[in-house]
Amino acid sequence: MIKVNVLSDENSWSKKIKKKELFFNKICKHFPKKYRFLNKKIYLTLLLSNNKEIKILNKKFRNKNKHTDVLSFPFNKKQKKSKENYLGDIIISFDYMNKPKNLDNNEFKIKTIKIFIHGFLHLLGHDHKKIKDYKKMLNEEKEIFKFIPKTSILN
Image 1: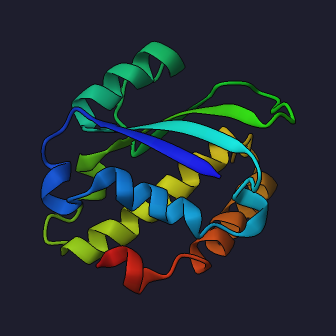
Image 2: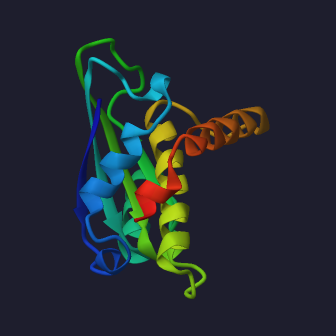
């Protein structure tokens, strides 16, 4: 089972997603079986941030002086097969999720779910530096997203 600890340094997130921790933990409960880590306790931290803060982190840890939609920092490159595991940290920028500004709450949530899945796959070691890896990761993202029941998550 995956437990997401949600932190936020951007107040605007609360306007779009009321119960943030419940929202992201609900998403994980609907992941396909191979990503739910049954009979294990898996943790990750999610920081809901903004362009200003994510740019600082991107510069500090990736030497890229620009903002981005999501950053992922895996705790370990190789996951050990233990009962309890900390996957790492995901940071998502509100400013990226809220483009265009006329997105309604459901469109915002769907966009956020997709980028959360993207960040989650990075924690598991997926990347998209090569075109074949990009295609593989995109297919995994789509596969996971299909399992998320939009009606129960969005309400």
